[in-house]
Length: 340
Length: 244
Image 1 (cartoon, rainbow over the protein chains, first blue to last red):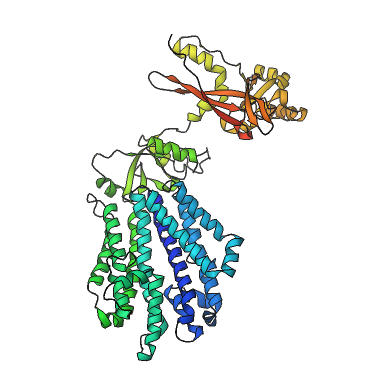
Image 2: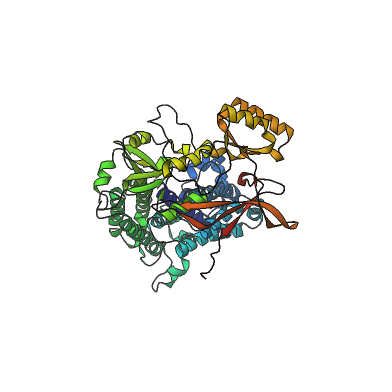
């Protein structure tokens, strides 16, 4: 596949998953905030920290503004100065979709274009002002509709694999980020009086990861820090767990890479192997919770590194690599014809 | 990218690429792919004739070195620089002679007389009969400059006269042919519209003509079908008589 096309598919997967998760997290935060422990002023700060936006928010709005839930939501939804806000992520997704339009079917293209157009409309702003939860649900559902339609309608192939690769990597990193919410809220030190608050935060984390129902279906699972952390990190059957994400990414990468040219994609593979080793060696139980912060930081860093490695491996071939690639080309494969 | 480019690329099994997807190394052209650089043997350009800047061998379509690779025979450009001469409408004047010269045959179909304004005698005659002629630019990409004398205003004819005098090489003229009409469905009901048929010939060892073509429909009161200014098109089939 032409690198530009694959990169657009990959970027589309990343951006759309980011928008979907952010919309889901904001909706859950909005609904959970009244039940969360501690002073009202501290209830939105954890989400800013978990999304990694705190460093941008404070200089822009002031540290005290984190107490203002409207200011936080305005920043996370509408911010113009970057692509990581909800609106920015959808704009980025739409731009990537235009760049790989020939890979996407008309149905999926129209779904995404419709969502992005709606978000830019006065109606979206009106719904945001009057029915905040409905606004988040509409954005999240639009993203999920696109993902479902792409699974249902797009032909399998390398371009589609890159779309799914972007989605899986983004999702894996975000599950780790959302697991950090509880620590951001309560800090590393706690006692029995904070037990109720801990439960409220873990419940919110489960809901943000759309995991509350699957989690409670587990026969022996009771709501506790170790149980939630183990479930969201290691549960193989749950599609938003870190382990499931990692296995999905490894599977896709194995399909994209070719035995005939093992050097292509080697960096990405190494990043994932490091992460897998780390996951396999995770401590369990209370010890996991004690060491959770470091482990989650490692997962977030590893997924970020994997994203960079994918870009370097597949989208930006090093100069002077022509001969290397020719040697690795499929035997008997004819040279390409191209229309430029 | 245009729909027709995507469609044709898909049907032909070709990669549709942008200039940034290609690079030249060691006088060979490559496409950047997820599996590394992939050698490219043939390129069909879907872009306009932008003038390359600087060293013509170093700059073409934003792919440095592509023309050098082409000049050294390492890559084929299906529509190479210079092919555009075949689109020059001034060639129309010489087609009957070309048929006689290359095929030693008389043309089966007569063609409309074409006056090349670059020739002094033709130009004088064209300027005297401008109101009766259709004047076309030689460059096919500027079809919007087509002027149909019988429907042009005095001012348009005066402007055209100046253009021809200033750049005679850019224009040819043909007697205006009154087109046939065909019924068309409009907001005012069924109305006659002038139509012209575009036939398609498939080349090869034994060229053949497609049993149909594209009928271009002129706008109301217009004497020529000009897609750039509106109008429409109809699919056209030639029905074969059943064998007796």
